[in-house]
Image (tube, rainbow, N blue to C red; front, side, top):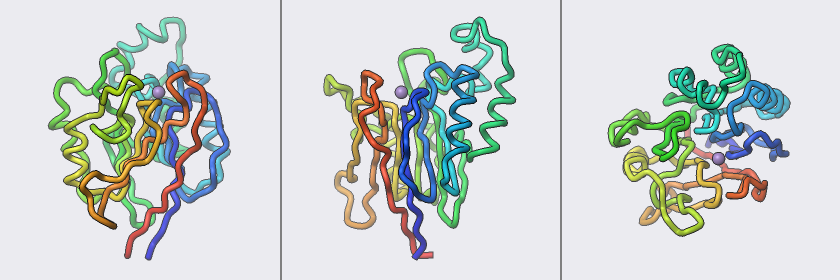
Length: 232
Ligand SMILES: [Mn+2]
């Protein structure tokens, strides 16, 4: 039996918190408010100071500098008066974590697949153009953990008015892939862990929304711990 303790958090928006110890630290995005150079540098310093052996980062829609493809457009909107090299910052970040952008990493026999992309209404970073149906076909078979910035439909995706905003194609695909864990943030007010509806026993997927900030951007929640196990 192989086991890893995962420490999962999201939505820190340039605030820094103490996190529990574990083997793999996972941040599901929105570690900044505006993707400013200093915000990213502060996050890198924080990340470097964490003792976890492995670190995985999936950016969020606020971390605009990490969306290097769209950055020239986003710069005009958000960073008119700053001048820095986004590629260099991304490189610095990659040197202290596994940065997953529609890609995977295998750690001690466990496969983690991550994506920052979401379907959203405001024009931020990492947005899926059009339907997400084909988009989620990129999730790799055999993933033990799926990490996305936004929630799938029905799990941890409720706004305070009760409206569910999770991605319907994402949940469809995740249920086919059958990871042990799907962890995400995105919707601050839906922090919590959820068991797969209609799932059975040990094969049921666990869904965790690990947003540590509430909808008023106040830190209210603790990072989640999850024991990832498998017979190897
Ligand atoms: Mn957020």
